Structure formats: C-alpha cells, structure tokens
Image (cartoon, rainbow, N blue to C red):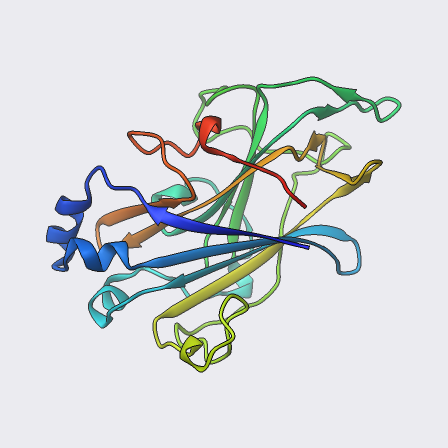
Length: 241
C-alpha cells in the first residue's frame, strides 16, 4: 500500500521569492513536489519515503542547490534544514520498553532530515520544539544507546532522471528537471497493523521539503501553518497505511 502526498509551496513570501529568483509567482507555484510513503521488507520491515521534485524551467533548475550523492558523506549530520532538505515528521503513542504496551503521549514526535548528498539526521522532541536546544536531541533506537539511522534506496547523481516516474506513467514523465531521492527507516511491527519507529508508534506523518535555490529557501508541505511551521502538528496527516 502507498500513501501519496502532494506538497504545495508556502505563500507568505512568494512574490519576494519570485523576484529574487527572477521568475514569476506562477512559475514557483508550478514546482511539483510529491512524496510516496510505503511499508517494505528489504529484507527487514521499513518505512520507505520517496521524494520527487520537478521544476518547470531551466532558470529554476540552474539555481537549485541539489548536491550529488556521495557514499563518503552518508552519516549523521546536524543543521541540514539550512540547505536543501527532505524532511518527515512522525508522531503517535509511545511504545513502552516493558511488555510492549502503548502509552498515550500526544506531545512527543520525531523529525527526519535528509540531504540529497547522503547526510541525514533523526531527532526526538518531547513536545512542540522541546527540548529547544540546537542542534536537537538525536533519536536513539530502542536500546537507548545507538543513534537511529536511515538507509538510502538510490544514489542518483544527475538531475536528469531518465526513467518513468512512479507517480506518472505517461511518456511525458520524462523530464530534464526531475530530481528524486528515497530512503528507508527501520520499523517495529505491532499488532493491529501498527508500526513504530524506535519507540514511537506512527499515528500521523508529515513529509515536507525545503528547496534551496541560491540564497532563497522555498518550503513545501501538504498543508502549511501561517507563517510556515513544519512542527505544527495541526497540519499533519493521519498515517493511512
């Protein structure tokens, strides 16, 4: 089963952003950002997130900061949100370490950051943006000692993804301005078709993207707070897998 997300651009500074990038507002609104979430076994159970960005013009493509994937860069890194960043926020009840029971916890959540070059970070928050330390507190696996990690599903190094999109099967799906990255996050399988990342049962999910074009950051999510705030769970989606 797949859960698809169509992300839209935040509009608060859209006119200013268009002026800085020397494009029209309509051109920015035509940037297409899609995310596909699904459960896979490769070979262990994982949540697979695939991000696809399509830019409508060469002018935008020339300005997009999309680093090439490098095996040597794969690993934990902080402050990835200051660059082009593939993100996902996850919240739900907490899975107790003892007896695998659920604890009602409406505040805690996980933030996943990933840079196209291979760097990533997973953070744990007890409540809205808390702890407020920078960088945030890393997420640890259920053992409490090992930092949680992701597994990249591809290492495409060019912007020209010459393949048919998993979102669009038509011949028009070929595009010189398409960018794609995907990664897996290990899961714990629970009864009643529930899944957990570390000790957090997935109840809501919020994929989002920051695209850095020159010095201009564009923010994409399925729904936006005003001003944009990816941490605001009022705009997150129910996990429907």
